[in-house]
Amino acid sequence: SYELTQPPSVSVSPGQTASITCSGDKLGHKYACWYQQKPGQSPVLVIYQDNQRPSGIPERFSGSNSGNTATLTISGTQAMDEADYYCQAWDSSTAVFGGGTKLTVL
Amino acid sequence: EEQLVQSGAEVKKPGESLKISCKGSGFSFNNYWIGWVRQMPGRGLEWMGIIYPGDSDTRYSPSFQGQVTVSADSSIKTAFLQWNSLKASDTAMYYCARRELGDRHGLDVWGQGTMVIVTS
Image (cartoon, rainbow over all chains, first blue to last red; front, top):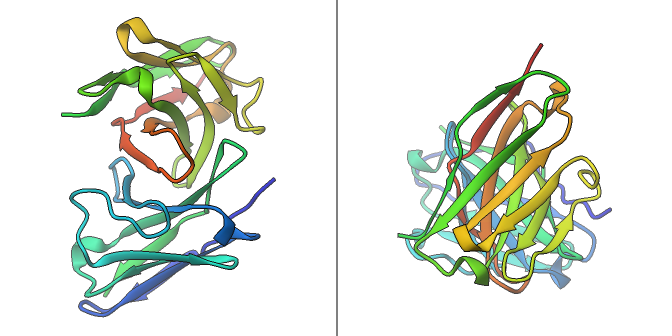
């Protein structure tokens, strides 16, 4: 079965750029999505179709996907961006999630 | 407002059956896929299955095939997730979420989650 791999944790200082990676076999041939989940809340879609932001998502969130790696980039990271982030792709009509990355802003 | 509203928390015993629901409003329910996601305590998101209420086309994750049943009633804009015999390991938060047609889309509207606790 298809698998996506994320680093368990990433740390960033406020105002700096955070990058979270997601690796999978030929992931660049699929579309990648990213979700933000804060404690006690439902996930929120922040990137779809590799690099598209849904309405209401700040411009500091961006994405890319090439080769075997998709990347979520948060520019000018704010304290409110501290959360768990999950990548996701579709494989044969089945969603596959990465294991999640805890982003700490300190 | 486009939203999915899920049924309330459940506390059940092992071996009992359960059916939880996810009601859509503010959008054309029949024109979206509705999926189910499990999140065990302190763990990540796991894909369970998805249904297209317009024609009841249903797909399951291999990990959940035969363990749960996904269904929908388009007349009441509601999707369901059902267990015939719960286990303690089914204790988790369950989310429903919608997706437009096409793999380029993500899960853009999520329900608030239904907590299921299975304990003797």
